[in-house]
Image (cartoon, rainbow, N blue to C red):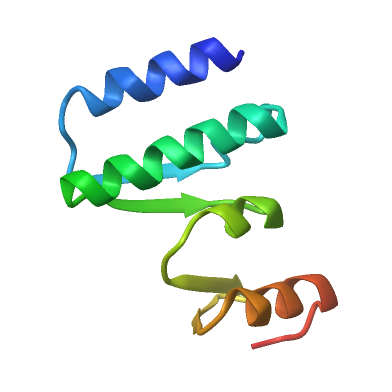
Length: 96
């Protein structure tokens, strides 16, 4: 599974996209593989001017991906200022 996801990602990146959308991309990966992929993507996006959109329910994913955060809840989309605020909203189930 890990090798398959890495191959899919590299194949996709060979087309030199300007935007990368990851939807629960690390859901079936172990922590080490997830960290490898996020480290690679962070460097790749920074070096190539690529925007990466990461859709996840896994809060540990958020810890390793820098950027702007949005919280989707009850048909609302709210920009969140910090990871800590996002963690608080998600873990405590507060509405936005």
